[in-house]
Image (cartoon, rainbow, N blue to C red; front, side):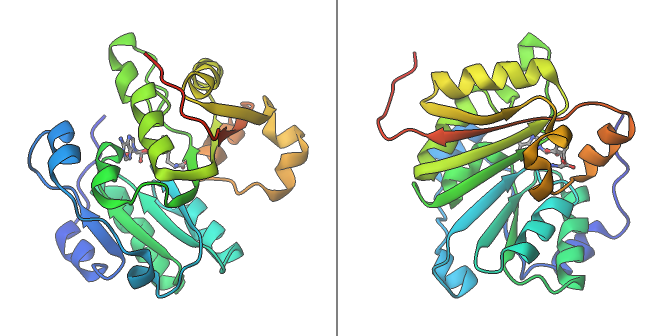
Length: 232
Ligand SMILES: C[S@@+](CC[C@H](N)C(=O)[O-])C[C@H]1O[C@@H](n2cnc3c(N)ncnc32)[C@H](O)[C@@H]1O
């Protein structure tokens, strides 16, 4: 079902323009954009410091990244979300709560290499990415090889991806893809809320819904291995 466009969306986005670093260019196809367009961010200029930068892909309404940013004031956060209708709520909340160490990109993750320098990211969070079980949509899954190669290029050596999902099939698929794409997988749990990792966990908007339905939450961490491994 299509979400109704929020009222006064453009005005509301404009009112948050100081927090919004990029807005999708209705341009070129994504592959061309990634190859031809470059507007690399200077984090020192953006945040006014050289603290480590973490990235959430598919931040939705921003509950997770805002709480993470408040708990970790010594870290900078970027939140990417393709849907303007939801990222606007995240930005408005950041403004309301005066969270100063988070900025937003309203773009598809496919074109992150246009904006983020290589090997500049410390951690990537993938929270409840859409599982897209249809085989025909495999390339759109955020843990497909296509995306993991983008993530690999953005992550510093030893950098990590932290994934949470409610889908057992998507989780198993992701574990395989992490290994195929040169990541070492650890901290695997098929019941996050019954595990030691629950203590530090920040519950996202979707996670709250799935918990309400009594579903188990799957979590894993994938660490970028030092040496490049080519995956055919
Ligand atoms: C199921 S929601 C999860 C939202 C939030 N992370 C949470 O846990 O509550 C997935 C979000 O990812 C966004 N998304 C999906 N594909 C994306 C892509 N290629 N680039 C950026 N955002 C994407 C969707 O628009 C949606 O808001």
